[in-house]
Image (tube, rainbow, N blue to C red; front, side):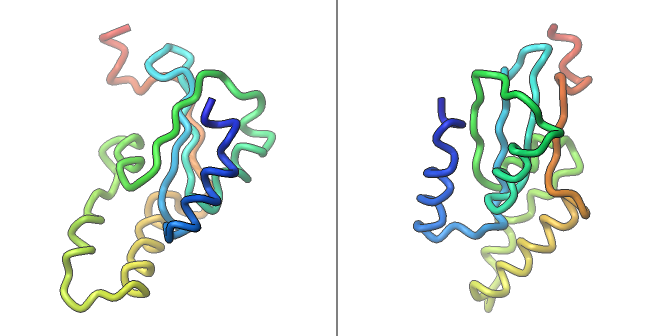
Length: 126
């Protein structure tokens, strides 16, 4: 599926001008009890997927690219990114610094997020 072509997709996004701070997530077996979320940035996702923490891939995998990935991490996700883009006087470097700070708040000092299972809010639907 798409995860097998992740390297070429990341290269294409880079060629299109996407910042390496843009969030990306791989959701394996979405909405199943054994769902797994693997989230990082365009720069860090391949390293995270190759880590021993992730282990074997669980197919099928769905890829989500963009700031909406932060909403997959629950209510603590910072979705004010659209407000940043509308700030007057913000140039590309300033916006990238805001993106870097937002990623720092989201991931802290981690390379990414690996979360097994459905969020507890979904238990009522299983």
